[in-house]
Length: 491
Image (cartoon, rainbow, N blue to C red; front, top):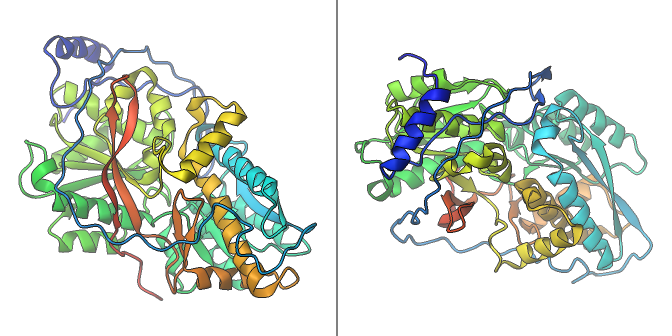
């Protein structure tokens, strides 16, 4: 297939589509590049600034996708995160501990992911301390800038380890950190709680010290494929047959390769689902993914899975919509992705063209800002509103880190009840996690430390839909269900 140039062509086609009332997919346009920034990569490189003219996309209200009702597994019993002073055996007023945390404050990826992790952590710790701490113990955030670079993640961990007392736990937010610290935290017996959901880091070897805030990426892909198959008669595109063919496009790094493990592919193929060879996209805000998308479509993909975040899924969505407008891709192909791909930052990057995200599916292991009947979300909203931050900052980073701090508080309370303040150690913290099993994270999500488990396997399926106000909203299509277990075999 020839490469398609979209700028002038799409302006004409979008107007034509709008005049005709549109097709099954929303009108498409070339995705405008984000503000000039360096490209987040294994070795940071500078990305030249680019400009794209804004193009109006007609936003249409889309009815929710209907799926047949399914019997849901019983929700796991969790330990409440509403008050971290409930059920304390003793109080330790005047004591404090460090919350050891490594995140990107500067550098290329930090500029794109934003400061949600920092804002959410601070808001939760401020509230916990204002409510009396954890059995009287105050939390003090000790945050260092990793730029999400693996070598810096390791250096920060080493600095934390040299402190007296040694850390009780370590927090991070990327696959690079999960991979580089996997063996060290076992050796040092310090639990590592991370948002980098790399399967091997959690499960090789078994009984390790790395725990995830969400399902491993291979479980997410396998779960989405299973959900599609169970509901294929209702959600399949008219252009598709009975067979599901998933084309995965992911960043050219460990995260981008995290979904298509041997175990995930074996599980899906066992259900008769085809997974095409992984297509990789450059980790750059100016990357062109037309060639990769053409390869997947020519190979018969009727489902596209994005294993990237921020500008990564924005590029995939924009390219697919452009190809659809040009008649080079089926108008009704299914597109979705990993939990990180369904986030406010993607909507912000698409800007005036955000309506082209309409119909995008995501695996969702946590509650969202629009779940206003959830007490955890209500707490978050109260603190967020008090902070004066703009609505554009309502992202997954804020929610995840906020909930993570309540998970830490709950584990700390259990540890204090087990060994007292003088007995605190990384190993005691680990033992408390194992004792608790399912750990509540402020009502926003849950963690799983039961037996050999190191990550939860509960998630929703949500879909991006244009609401009555013309804004993108993440709507629940399938409530929490159990994902397949695609952990790698023990070595």
